[in-house]
Image (cartoon, rainbow over all chains, first blue to last red; front, side, top):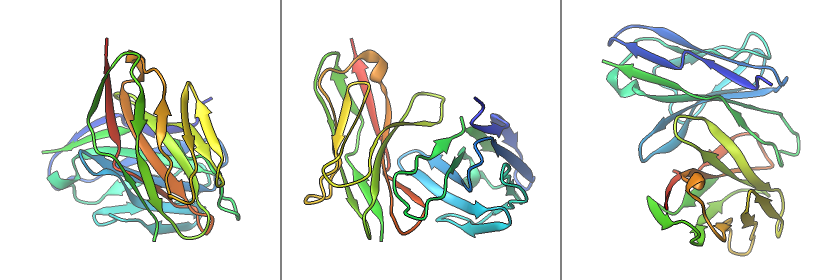
Length: 116
Length: 112
């Protein structure tokens, strides 16, 4: 059971470089999202999507782009990396439920990004 | 708006001690409540959940009861083990949308 798969697991970037964190899920989930996790700040939502072709901003979207061309994939692009983007990134997915109750969100294993 | 507040850590306990991690929430509508656990170097995994008032979620000896009157979902375990050392996150999702709201996490270390 693959679940949510993120790549790469570790990456070091130089300031100003761009890169894409890949995320794929095989559970046919409509909802996908990206979080960053920083010490003392918990998880903060970057972007999310409720279906192919639909994306929206979360709490901390600046410096990041997303697209959702298929149900399975939800890549996160860093346009011009900055040291403030050093963090652990998690992709997550869940079913959409019109009632909005009881959905479990499933996480990938994380991507450790360092910007120097 | 929706938010989750959980007790700050870190928490250090001896093996077989009783654990409580407090979690309170603010939500519109009727939220579902969750506890997630993150072991070192891994992503978050669902530990337990409750979808309506007075429901009790339980798993691996952990329990939490959805208390609407006190807007709380405290995590408890009667006897912790070294293998329970992890970061625990309280979370909610409202019935009006699909976004998840997480607390800041509580780090637990259990010493032999």
